[in-house]
Length: 449
Image 1 (spheres, rainbow, N blue to C red):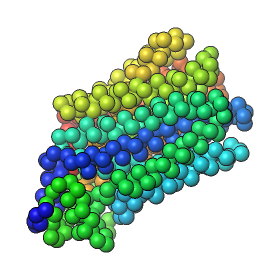
Image 2 (image 1 turned 90 degrees about the vertical axis):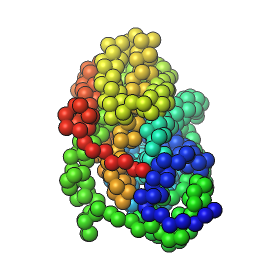
Image 3 (image 1 turned 30 degrees about the vertical axis):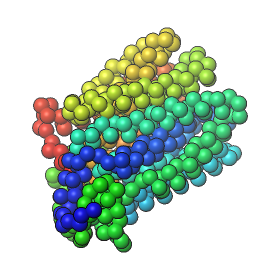
């Protein structure tokens, strides 16, 4: 392999413009696997909700808090653990986060009270938040420009794939061994992912260039060689636009980043509020409307199945359609489908068809945000920007299940709840419209490559 002198920009352009190597594809596949893990670990509470609620005789508010506990942990992980990836490395944070998830899921299966389970769901969520922000950035950094949006959508499909496969397995396990077995299955899957991530997940090229940790040159050259590129004789000089001593949050809220950051936060907040209402409460709401517990679980699986189909489809549509416009269309379609679903909660065939489509559109909207957000920031701020976006979004995700539980305790039923949360997708689309060319003042989006 030849040794050449390159700048940081040269290496980025090399990765962005070159054909993707097997090493890059493996890295993205591992990230998809991590997101599958997250998909099941986040939604396992919706699958186990009927059993947990029956065993401990929980009120709607208490059950809503259990849904939100994991999301509260995810917000904390995204806000405080994920930004450590910009300092200690994306791979390091991912490995630590998978370990946290493994422990949280393992002990959740042994919880003996509502308070214990809520605490352990929060712990699990911290790990999930750390994985999600860091892995999302790695997918963006290891994808070529041509395939970046496609890879981001495929990465997001892992979330629905994990929820679908995991939900189907959980339905069998819960039927035979009770709700605790679903958490033990999740723990086993998380432990298996530890060696997979260790061997298959590379460190970020941008992190090695930017932070230059011990043996950075050696590690950088190993990665370049694995991607079939010429190595370098010295570490490239990295020029950052950062003001010395400035914190990541201050930089995110300083022009020219302030406007796109705030718009993304607002859009994430409302989009995740609607998304987690749908995926957390639908099985329980349909059960309360007269379906059996098994039918309720099946409805959750079908939502996730729709998420897989939608994100895989849009992964390839994103190659020819601007990802911002595609995301906006998915948000508006989600709002319409929420209304259609609400009108047919007692008409099972129509409700399930609408549910599959809703799962596809809402999950694709989330994938669009994951593809869009990393492009807003420079390398030394990318994990922090993604972490804060996801963290603020998780606040919406936390409040939605909590508010739903309170409203149920005040005699709200499935139909008005679905109409109410359809509005969150509309509000998210209004925020995102500020970044769509032709829908107001367009924002400049920085290319990673």
